Length: 171
Image 1: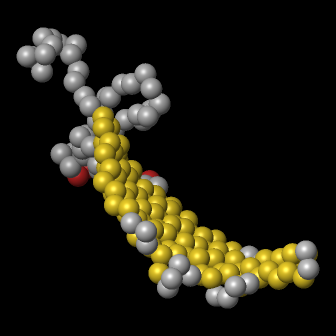
Image 2: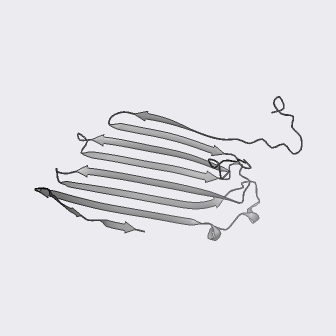
Image 3: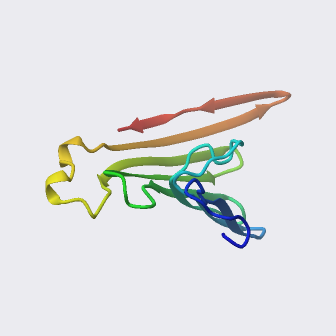
């Protein structure tokens, strides 16, 4: 950094960035993303509102059976404590899978699963064992949701009759 800007006691160099790699075709799409925001990174804009975060994402779309079945997935993993100097590290994993099936011309079924996992662990490996946090103070949360939504429609003349149901389970 000295070639660009003379460093002194108050100089702090940090960075933030994100990138993605995507593939698109008629029946399959996929995207991989990476985002890293260093600790102590300051910005005047909203894209990097939080710092000390690393996120990896994977998104896919697949259409099979002549377009009668489409499957979408979205997975992400995020954690903080990039410098390993906090007492605790927060990790989150988020996943979603959605399948839409066209059974007949009039019958359609949509199924969806979503999951969110939040957990903490000891973050600073250089702390003595006596200063490590106890498991009982760590956050641990798992939220899942499953939805099943069949729909059926029929027409009679210029009238459209639509029947829809939804079954949802959350834990």
